[in-house]
Length: 487
Image (cartoon, rainbow, N blue to C red; front, side, top):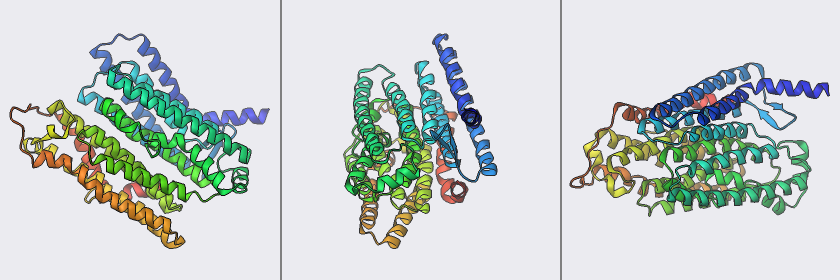
């Protein structure tokens, strides 16, 4: 008993930043309950949330150095329920950075949201922190449900008809994927007698089952993760939710849950003692084809970016299909840099909507001629989404394709070559819809009587930060890659 209590106290000490963040969440809930809605309270909540996020991000950065100095590997906490390592801390930092930019987007563009939004937003981030430390299937389910429930509320928080419809579709798809995942977990537990990923029992007993049975169970367990990743076949909610939901919330859903999910998928795949590449390849190919081919026909920029997210979920998994260290590092690099690119894309379409009151492509005509900064920013962001130089989107795709090619050469598995070819073809397909935005902005004549709207310093400044990071990480990718290699 003394040993167990000592272990719990040790675990609590190492998770103190997360526990303090949970305490701050409770304080925010209390403030929300006793604060009247006004412009002053709105500014207060934005300031408070950003301050909390910057503080916790700094703590995690310091803690990353602490882990590097005192621990060579990860630490198992709370009797195998939590696994704390440098990788999980790095992903917590990514989640925190994305959350900071989402609040800045919300504040600078001028969205007015309910005070309850901030409490739910912090709860979702706390769930992602727990998710990034998951190495146990029970904790995986609990953390994922915490993130999912908060996401459902965020989508429907505006109470409009469109939001309600999107929220219901999101909820039904999420509930289905959650049920599939829970059944897959029960199958894996029945096969292995363990819920601990990476344990000797899990690997040994899973490999003793028929390959097709183990593959089906593993795929079902991935259901909830693929849902948050917007990957096929759990992608159907994405375009409707993206179109109906306020853009800052969509920006958050487009990257933060994916960051948390990717680290879990990395651990899950490394724990499997079966060949899971066929199902992974089907998921990747399905996501790429559905996302890119559907995006070609879209006239709404947010809906187009929704289908784009499905395709990028496939690209994120390409590096993991390589099943080697470089593949994992390239996938992490892709996710980290995609964060800046996708957040930039949603800020861009929101700033354009301020000028046009519409998210339709035709409303963008001539805006690049009227505002050169917006036109150039659109070119940089869209070619980054395609994966062209001189943007970090090119570096990210180059790394995941190189990792997959190296894996093909070492294993001579034709399936990997097929996935690589389809990925390259889909990159080419994406050119035709991503470049629609700068095409309409720069080469189309402006509509007669179109609304003129001058962007302020802070709006331009936020967009400039993203554009700068997109180009800077192309010029100096080692800045990020060396950090990833040290994890």
